[in-house]
Image 1 (tube, helix red, strand yellow):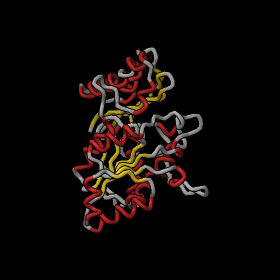
Image 2 (spheres, one colour):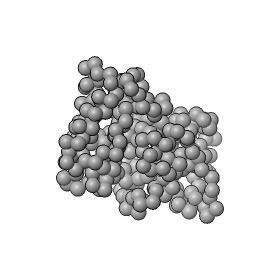
Image 3 (tube, one colour):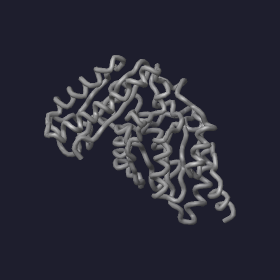
Image 4 (tube, helix red, strand yellow):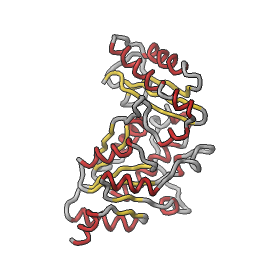
Length: 291
């Protein structure tokens, strides 16, 4: 019992899979409910809101911190992806995480690694069009984390809505006994969705980036005023975002949440999702239009 008490009083940083399993096994034996917060680090308030949300659902919060190489395609920002473990450790400790799981890539993916998890259809639309290997990497690493941690509950952010929907589908299809919680987007005061990649934005790009949220809010107000044409809503958002000189639109889609398929008319469960480039920085955002 003394070992358990020590773990509860002091956040642990654990790098080895076997060590984590031993510790979590002790918690399970005394009936503790375990939560997982999967992240790639460089925490902002959005990440910390995940800890807040999951703390209410579990006794032990495991926060994984792993920049997953498998979800980065050729030419993407794996090497320059922001990292600051000391800062992340401090923030996680202050927020009340119990364990940081901080594995090495060589432990997560051995030399002969050749097994992957893929969700057809859901991973081929939206971000999957331009990032064809991304969701294969996401589902594979999340499935591995689920098997390593064996959480009772796991939490994901709404900003990466396609990812959250794919994870929910994977959990259902593969019968993972895990409750999935999706937490609302956390935004900067000017409306920009919080993201670790926001630090890439230049001063001028950062000034213009909130046009994304402004466009989504315009769309929502238009739907509330009675507009039901998905194409008119899409064009409205496009026109607003294009008013920012530095913005380059990758996609604007009005889609059903259950299957990520486009709709002609706004209906319950419809949301609008966008990907917009500012210089070399790719930003995504989304907003429910009719819940």
